[in-house]
Amino acid sequence: MHRREFVAALASGGAVAVAGCSDTDENVEVGIVGETLTLTTTTSTYDTGLVDEVDAAFEDRYGVTVEAVSQGTGAALESARRGDSDVVLVHARSLEDEFLREGYGVNRRDLMFNDFVIVGPEGDPAGIDGMESVTDAFAAIAESESVFVSRGDSSGTHTKELAIWEDTESDPGGDWYREAGSGMGQVLTQADQSGAYTLADRGTFISMRSELSIGIRVQGPIEGGPALLANPYGIAAVNPAVHETVNYDLALAYIGFLTSREGQELIESYSVDGEQLFFPEALSEDPNFQQYVPEGWRPEEE
Amino acid sequence: MIATIAAETFQALDPAIMEFPFERNYVESIVYVSLYVSLTAVALSTMVSLPIAMLVGFAEFPGKRFVIALVNTGMGLPSVVVGLAVLFLVSNQGPLGTLDLVFTKEAMIISQFVLATPVITGVSLAAVTGVEEGVRDAAYAMGGTRLDIALVTIKEARYGIVTGVLAGLGRAISEVGSVLIVGGNIAGADGTAITRTLTTAIQLEARQGRFELALVLGAILLTLVLFVNAVVLRFGGGRI
Image 1 (cartoon, chains in turn orange, red):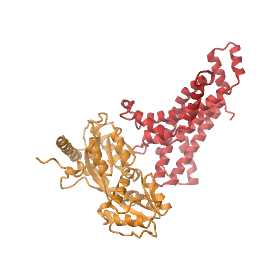
Image 2 (tube, each protein chain N blue to C red):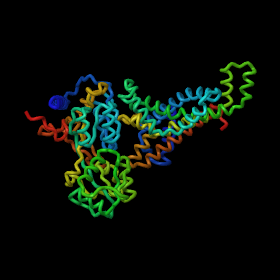
Image 3 (cartoon, one colour):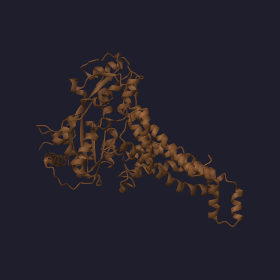
Image 4 (cartoon, one colour):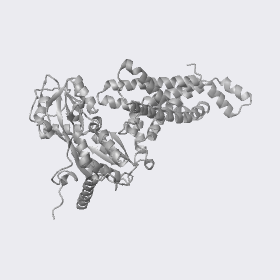
């Protein structure tokens, strides 16, 4: 069973890759013209404007409509589980893997990455400025009981934050730890107002930086920070075997487009305030089979 | 039409206040979605609410008080809860899943219908029961049929009913919880709103920390409600 799933995933993954390669032909006649693709995605890709940018190009090329719903990773995957969306673009590998294992998602591809940063107030009461280790920085925040605002909304950023706390010796809790239960922008504003620390994705932070007095205290890997703060985005189609109403062909065309050279170049050239927000990851010299299957999954040995 | 007027009014005002921060097409389509969804929902609600209000108002039956209590409770329905319930109803796996309604204006109309109906029913009920019995007796004595009596009662209670309809509209157009869940706050890549209303657009701007823009949209929403109220009162012969 597992083996067959794996083979199927490989085969269709290959198809996606092929679809991605053939996009130099300008006169592609695909049977998807006029159809509508429902994409559930995270607030970070939507609020930075990236989704609108790539969707406009995709719509132009295929004569289709993309309806993007921005929900946060947890909710986006939940919509996909119910069959209410055709494709998901999210950033929490553990949740994506769960989604794949349960059989709701197929043909996951690595799409792009950026990174998380720890932002905090000017005076830096926890003294974490420029720390090399994320867990040490979190521990310092906990020990000094500096106010920390958590997303608290099962988003990709929240999932990342909880994973970091898991690795940290101190536990979050007490008056200083506040769960906001809101989107990144609101949490940044809240942290700004109350002089607190928070974990933010670089994209949203950059797009709001001009309105904030809090700044980056610990850099992510893009600026040479620790690898633990990497923020990879994946894209996956909803399994048509589970929900026969989903538009699988269009979903694969979308995945193919985004992971093609053209799509990746769009992502690479997208910038806010002259700063690149996302870094393409789909095109690589080496075959990366792990992107199609849950992380750490191995085919059974013969 | 109204959308255009609203946008034009704002455009005319803008040099005096500030650079208008949105694409015209964006605002127009959002206003259109807001009005289309809320007005349709309220129209449907009114058609359902009035007969219920008349029936409950004049018929005597066991459990009448319970029904009234139910209607009054419905006025306080949290919109998020209604949104979730409608989502389960229209979601692909839900009972109405085959109709493919999730993330559409129709789904938003359903949820606003659920929200507005108790308000319109409740206020209309109070209005029709407030009509003096003498009026109905007179209509009956003059040989009126049951329909005539009902029409006379509605005519007498019209101010109260109009208030109910406007309250229902206020409830529908200003709520954000349910339309966000069942509609998905979708705008096309070209900036045309599909299921984005003024309230969900405000929520989106606020989420991104752009409070000034959110307030601008809030002002448009208020202007719009004021405008609709003025029109309804003008043609409803209002004295309120």
